[in-house]
Image (cartoon, rainbow, N blue to C red):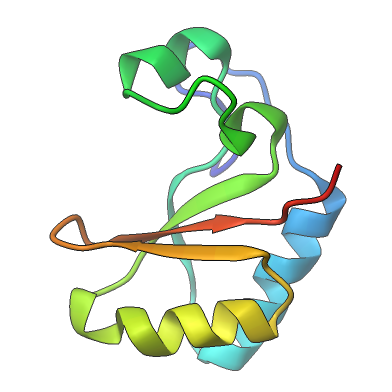
Length: 101
């Protein structure tokens, strides 16, 4: 499952994140491949995530996107309501955040 932590198998997904991902899927016109969804504290540390990462609250996702498509994908993500769309050059993914409190 896309939003199940690989180490503890906990699932956490903000409803806002799910709605924005669906909106982005429609704008993108293709399936979104999630590299990383929810992460527990332990797994977040293992992958070098930020201490206050929104992945730990089910409010962020890393989506596999070809580097050449990063600019267009990020623009569509912002249109879909994401507060942040950060391309990670050379990694083949874009980090998305909902930013709600």
